[in-house]
Structure formats: C-alpha cells, structure tokens
Length: 496
Image (cartoon, rainbow, N blue to C red):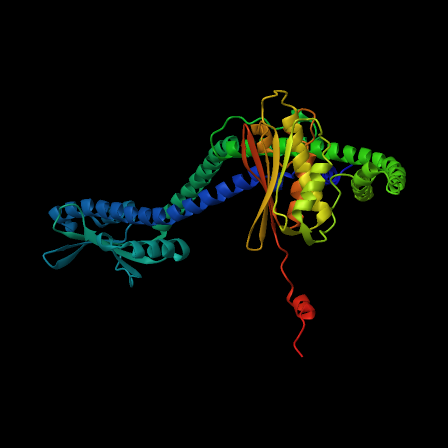
C-alpha cells in the first residue's frame, strides 16, 4: 500500500469517526437556536417601545374619557349632581378627582376626597421618548400604589382637563399587554425560526450534508469512479463547491491510479534490476577483455562500449522503485559539452536510419554540471527526438537532430532541436508528467520526467520553447553553482 493510499485510508477513518454528529452539534440545530435567539432579541427591542407607547395611549384614552365627563359637568355644574352620583362617576372612570383649567383658572369638578400629595405629574402631549421609556419601566417595576396627576388638552378644545388617580389600573393593563406581547413575540420567533430553518436547510444545510456524505462515501473507496460526486448544476457558491469537489476527487483518483502504477512498476524494476546487474557485470568483464585486443576496429569501439556498460552498471546500482527514488545530489564539475554530445550521439545507435546528428557546440564551451546526469538528460531528449523522426517513413523528409549551446553571464543554455513532427497537444499539456507526457503510443513519458528532475537538481529549468511540424526545440538552462566565500578564501593564494 502506497503512502498516499495509507493517508487516504487514515482520512477516511477519521471522517468515519465523525460520521454521526450528535443532534446538539448539528448545524441545523445551531441554526434553529440562533434564529430563535436573534428573533427574540429583535422582539425585545420592539417590546419596550411598544409597552411605553401603550402606556401613553392608555393615559390619553383615560384623559379623553375624563374630558367628555368634564365637558358635561362644566355645562351643568357639579352641584347639580348628587354626591352619590359623583362618586359613581369617579369610580366608573377609575379616577379620584377631575378638574378643568380654563382661562388660567383651575376649577375642581368632581372629587371623592382631597387627594394627598401627588407622586408624578404627566403632561401626555409633552412626553418625549426617553421619558416615555423610563416612565413605562418605572410603572412596571415599582408602580401600583403611586398617585398620578395627568393633564392636557383633548382634541381642539381650548380647555385643559386634569385627573388624579392611582397607577394600579395602569400597571395591571400594562402587565396584561406585556404578557400578550411576550407570548406573541415567542410565537413569532418560533414561526420565523421554523420558516428560516426550512428555507436555509433546503438551500444550504441539505446540500452541505450532501457534500459531507459524498466525501465520506468517496473516502471509503477512493479508487471507485462511481463514488465521485455528481454536481447538481446549481449556479451559486455551493454549486461551485460541488464542481470543485468533483474535480478534486477525479484528480485524486488519477493520482492514486498513477501511484499504484508507479508502485507496481517500481517492484518490477527492482526485480529486473537485480538480474540485470548480474548480466551487465558479465558484459563488463567481456568488454574489459575486448579492450586488451590489438585489433584497430576493436580499439576504436571498445572505449565507447566500456563507458556505455559502465554507465549501465552505475544506473542499475542506483535504481529503486520509481516514486521513492531520490536522485543523488549532482557532483558538479566543468564539463566539455561538445565531447559529451559526441558520446550521446555515438550511443543512440541509429546508423542507417537516415538521421543527421549535428553537434553545433563550440569546442571550448564548458558547462558547470554533473557529467553523468547531463549525459542522461541529453540522452533522454535525443532518444525521444530520434524515435519521433524515425517513425516518419517518408524518404524526402529532412531528419536532423542538432544540439547547440550558448552562454549568458553565468547561465548556460543548451538547445536540443529536431525536425520531427512536433508534439501533440495532449503531450504538451502533461509534458513532464510520468505516464502522461508521452507523444507516441506505448511510451511512458519517463524520459522527459527524469530529464526535468535532473535539470531541477542543478537549479535549472527544462522548457519546450517551440513545437510545430518540422521543428521542436527544448532548452536546458543551467546556472553555474554559486561560489562559497569561505571556499574562495581558502583556495586563493595570498601574496607573500
């Protein structure tokens, strides 16, 4: 099992642990509670001004009733009413005294008994919002036995009527009103919370649960294509999330498939490598014997054969399962590039294929690199170019592979140019990805992936700068390694 598969399995187990969320921790429960709380807060902010307004309306209505009775008494005179009738009128209205002020003169119309000292004077037409709020709170909390004097004009009358009463009836009415408002607010809160919950649950919570279920379902078997989420086609943020999750799951499946492929390939390479080393060791012994022969032809070919087998032995000694392999750190030296290119061309083995090899590197050009790794880079690029050109059977087509180089300051640029058919679009999109960047049927794409990795180890870049029919150009850019100051000081000779 690969490391990615183990990590995926661990994530799936972790998701399975939280698969069943307790009711009190669910988003829907939190949403419902928060909605109720927020609506109640809004109702409380409305409740206090409503109670204050009710108090003022109640006092205004009471003053209006007193004004109607007072108008009758002013016309007929209070003396015309028997004392018992006056008491009945005051009891019916709920006040202790009625007075009128006309032309600057106050006159007591009806009174049960002379009231003691009044606790609060209220001019109903002049009460501001601050006084209304504080008065309502004062009546609700401490009212019931206090004596109030309420006065003001009613309608278009030029007379000002006054009444004296206790606030017991007012407080009782306010408590009933407050209770009704509180019950109504609670009902509205619950109803609003339910409607908001249903709407948001349908628009958000439900789809989020669907995303959660899809992730859990996918995590149990990430290699199963049927477990990839199918976007619902929504055009909002959740629709984008579904689409991105589907892309992520698709990419993860591809990565898992590639990792499995690489792991299998690594195992196969390790087995082959074990036997191949023995075969190459025998070939190396035979090549050493060939080098001792005096035949001129053998003497010309033997060094190349010895170097080729030596490189093969070196490669097999360092091969591990692909995907776990870490290339060794480049052992950088000054390398004569022209001689290295000749060796690469000599080992391509394409005699009679009709391909021209042009070494356009100046004889004195040097590059700061690991010679073995640079040889592998150029070999992979050259072999890909040769295979692409060799596949074209048309005899009149020019087949030429050219390697050139140039230097800008401390930067070396190596150009590998061929006259092949160019790379298809699919290969360009996955150019340096193993098993996806191959331009030919049956290819693995490992050559470019290995070359790119080796170039990056040198701190450089490998780029495809042109790929059209008849011309493909790869550019290798390798900077010189920076000179360490302590090393420079130790190597420089100081004058005597």
